[in-house]
Length: 236
Image 1: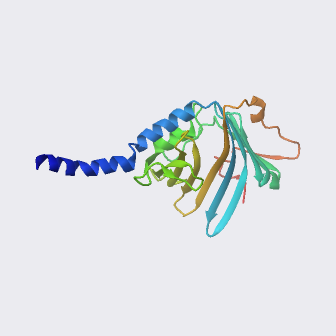
Image 2 (image 1 turned 90 degrees about the horizontal axis):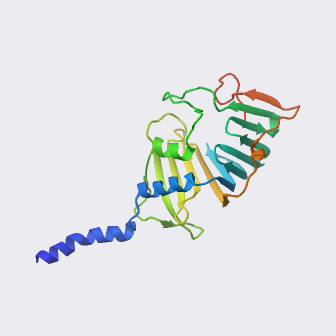
Image 3 (image 1 turned 120 degrees about the horizontal axis):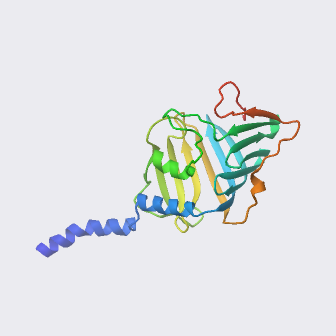
């Protein structure tokens, strides 16, 4: 009888192990961090969808990243828009109004928590997310099959301190290579934004010149639009 009870009491643990496949959120996050810390360059195609008050806005294009801190987002929707940074200065060009925001990333400004917004030695944004959010699996069955037939770990995140921005996020992590293929964020007003990455290429050679921005004569420059209250770029 004693042995029978041991087997019966152990059976739920066995079922949990079978369903859970011995993965844990912290284990997955650790592998995500390791993967992204090793990436020197990344190119992708992206699609962004924002939903608010029954209005849907779509954006799409190609993105380029080079370590450390160099980014370039070329938009085909809205056509001609551009976000580019060499790691020191961020440029946000909006073709419709022929204006570009020039943001100094080394400016000493702080957020509501007293943290520097653009510190010189900013760690990857992804690492900051896992520090600023509680995270867990969305269900016990991980990884789970996506609509495309691939396996994904699905992580749900909640902001530790409600200081604005996305209070909740959902990340879809490829169970094969630990790259984030899709992210969904929701703010306190119910606005939802999703971004999906496709055709990801890792460590493809990218020239530094790709991350420079050259201002044409007719483009209006707005300095520090991300931290200057009086003047803001209107992207609506």
